Amino acid sequence: MKRYLLALFLMALAHASFASGGTDSTFTAAKDSIIVEYGHSGKIVILVDNKEDFEKLKILDVNQIIDELDLELDEDTGDLTVVEIRDKDGHSKEIVKVEEGGAETAVSVGRIKVIVDESGPTTKVRVEKTKKKEPSFRTYFNVDLGINNYLREGGGFPTSDQPYAVKGWGSWNVGLNLMASQRLSKGFYWDFGLGVQWYNFKFENRDYQAVRGDQGIDFIQRTDVDGFKSKVSASYLTAMTLLKVDFGRMNDNGNKGLKIAAGPYFGYRVGGRSKYVYRELGGSGRHKDKLNTGIYLNNIRYGIRGEIGIGRVTFFSTYDLNELYQDGKGPSETSLHPITFGLVF
Image (cartoon, rainbow, N blue to C red; front, side):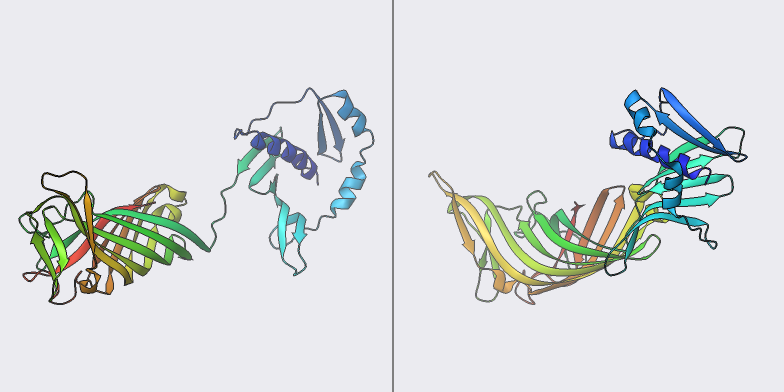
């Protein structure tokens, strides 16, 4: 008991310090102090800053404070819970906790801990702010923003002399994902979620338009107009799951470490079309042709997703194991497998 009340009084000062935005654990001494000594080494220190506070101190009953605390020591752990909140279901939440360890006594309120050390000739006090406890399960929302391309059968990107060659800038991939994360062990997580992804493949050759042919998608060269933009887009409802290793959490460094994750995904197409923006030769104003070419896109997509993060920056990449177009409905000379690179926000 000799250090409990001292720590509790200092706890009030610690809260005032942190509430004002400061994180320094050094306190400025008050103008006056009252020291009550008892037993061989027991001591209560009361700091008084003005006359009004001193008048209120006259009616303070220290014995009543000690009796009402009704402290019960846990012999197994040495921990002492002073105040707790208990709901109707019996669940409780600790508000003030005292830890007795030889010459040291630590009083914790929330994430602030005041430690009183009487091992030496003088009493030492230090203040620590504990880290927020990581939940074992959490949900979160993230956004994917990347660029699309596709790999041909046998590897390699289409060259610019092919009408379906993709231009990187403008071939955006946007994903909105509702995710959940289950902590398996320290630094290891199982993430899973559901989202919507929008694929855009902007053609490098803007004179070619993707149209719906009788046997599949055709790429025709428009010489009758001046083309500005040509692309094919698709949207998919996608489910994914990832196994993640967070070296920062594993080494108690929080979000400062390296994170890697990988896992499969599966999607179902909910939309698809081509868009061609052009201007009449010798005319003014832009026109847009939007055609339903989605019937030739694969209704199912599946593949592998990988992520790598450093601190709060996370990169991702996806690769579709299936072809973008249905069998025999895309370019006749090759199959195209979408691949994406981008950032997770």
